Image (cartoon, rainbow, N blue to C red):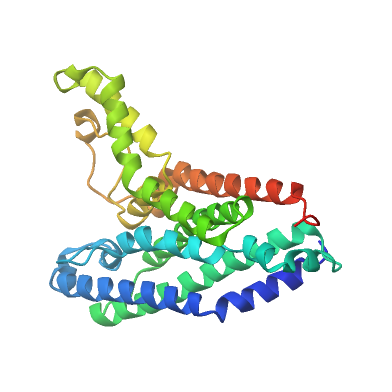
Length: 311
């Protein structure tokens, strides 16, 4: 694809050298280090009695500070939105898009290069944060993680990249569809608020509406209501991310659905191996990947069909 490498290198250099990147990196790094530092203090005395103590650094909340997972779930979308809300429309408003396409560069190389450069920026940012935070946790706990714990953290990192990548693809779509960067930014923030706060409430409301009000006294109806609530809540990438990361970092989790008494009786309390945890979260990972691909496909098709010369 002619011009893809040039667009990718230029956009990657712009992202890594921008103040926007430095601010977002410092914000997430500070939040992550604070969370892990406080979590390490609260679990140091329980290391001897805890399995997978290193993984507890990412899931333990202490005092007013939430866990590292919560920070990523809350701040990760802001990173994806900030890197792409003006990716295309800013070129449009400056009048540089038509001049860019006048060069020997294919049109699809522009949108693909911008998206891949921002995605690589996210991967580099999160990798740096994970290395620094992990090193801080090892220093505070004086504990070397086992190979399985390292692979679980790597799987957690991959899920985080996919999660932030969805918001990047959504912001790219808004940047293509909406002409003004401010409008695209507001649309992205509205989507973030909707998926973060309102999807769970909507899922609870629909589950209560479509299932009998006597569900509390009918086990089958209660199970049906819970399954419907989970199905609707999983339309949100936030729910998919939280389920996937908890199953990876908490090996004792054996199911992501309702737990019945018959499922608990006779079950051994041993943690799942990594392969079984990955099989458990496979639908969530595929869901995040599908949502990201769908959003980018919309942006790609819209951009390829837009008239550039008249703008």
